Image (cartoon, rainbow, N blue to C red):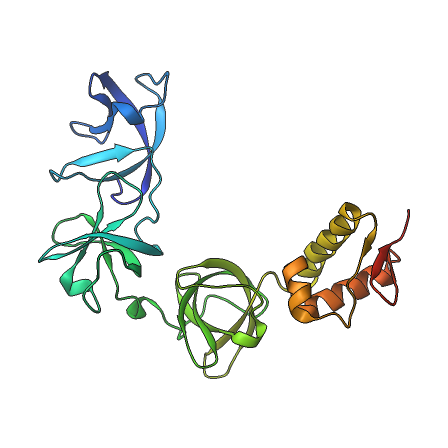
Length: 277
């Protein structure tokens, strides 16, 4: 069975001038010659992405699209028509967004967060701006401290509304963000709090001990790169700390406290110094 809009592992049925025909249980799906890996022979198994070409035929490619069916991703409009818009998703053929699946008319050159789905009438991969119905916090599949994938969804008065693991909605507070973010960005985060009403607060990066471990390794590496001394301490400006270390002041203070207890650094009036082993 071939899954349209997804990656498939298919056997090479035969090699022709046009390319390799992959076994789909029928006539075969063409992998055009320019995408056939060198040395490919009949009987080989290839990982390919399958979609419909401009003539509505199934076709395979070794290119990697921006998103597969089920994904939510930011894509740019590269064409419009009376029936809808066309998005660049990294393949030879653009991804179609019907007018009925647009919240407002998409403009040429604009970037939009969309969901990739299979159109029931045509069987082709298509895109939709309507995402809310896919997201629910009624039956949660996450718990506090879980590491999760976040997609930046939109701004609110308090912070960024984020999509959690393509299933749930959460909030990332502005005062806990120390890096530039844009709609459509995909970042690693963790579940901070699940409230009684089902609302979820999230944080960026990894939670707890593992996060401190990662940041401790970074500080030790930066010390090593700077002759064992860095002019940063617990009174340093938060923005200066973020610009140099890529972490919040709170995370920085926690981490240097851990390193000090482990006797890996010394704290001076002007900064931190590596302890010679």
